[in-house]
Each structure stands twice: as structure tokens, then as C-alpha cells.
View 1: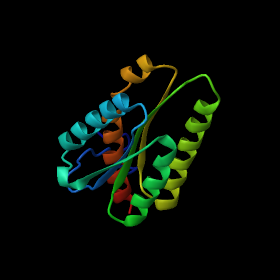
View 2 (view 1 turned 90 degrees about the vertical axis):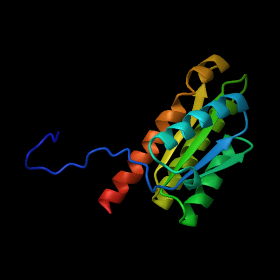
View 3 (view 1 turned 120 degrees about the vertical axis):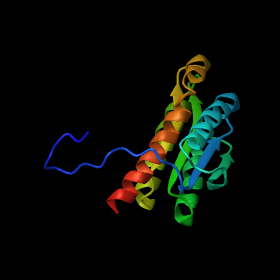
View 4 (view 1 turned 60 degrees about the vertical axis):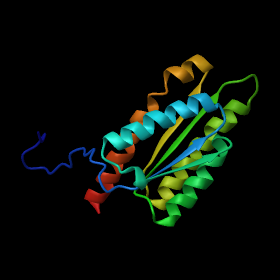
Length: 155
């Protein structure tokens, strides 16, 4: 139901039919990443994205994700992209570096390509937190579909 009678508003649309979605998954912390991917693809299919319209690419770690997203984004083959991974705090500064750089890279790719990118790269203190947050794959699928539909409605 619209909030206003005289102001148009675009309603959220989770219809994935006809959308082409690229997914880039890190293989580092593989068990968590596979859980994210499973949740993500199940939700994409549930939303109506055809299996043949989903492309999955894997990379060694979270820092490699933005480059593959950029390549996918420039290809013109996708309506939305999804980044999946897990950066789990260790004993060194590396956690902050990877967390910050992957986030900045993904945002830059989205703005440069004009494609929505759902960032499902978990940044957690430990393995238990990461395992508890694998549902983020479902949320990323929903965000990717909704944002692709929103951008199409605005075009």
C-alpha cells in the first residue's frame, strides 16, 4: 500500500524471472563460503531466477573478488552481482586490511559499472559467528533481485 496518494513510490519487487545474476565466492574459509553459496543459490531459484541465468565464479580469497566482479560487470551479461566470502579475525592486522579493501573495492565496482552488488562477505571475530551468519547468502539473493528490479524501474 502506498504511503502517499500524490507521490509515486516504487514498491520492492522480488521477482527474479528473467534476471541474470553473477556470484563470486571466495574459497578461503570454504565451509562458511559454501554455506553462503548454498543459501544464496537456493533463494535465487526460489525467487524465480533460472539456474541457467546464474553464473558462479570462485576466487582464492576476498581481495580477489572485486576484480572478478568488475570483469563480470563490464561484460554486459548480468543484471546484478553477489559477492560471498568470510574474513575471520586472526592475530594480525591482516583482518582489517582485507575487510576494508574488499568493501571499498566492491563499492567502487558497483558505482563504476552501475550494477547492483550485494556484499555477502562476512567479517567476524571467530568461526562460530561466521557459521551463524551463513543466512546472509539468502539476504544477498533478495537484495540483488530487488536492486536489479529497482534499477530497471528507474531506467
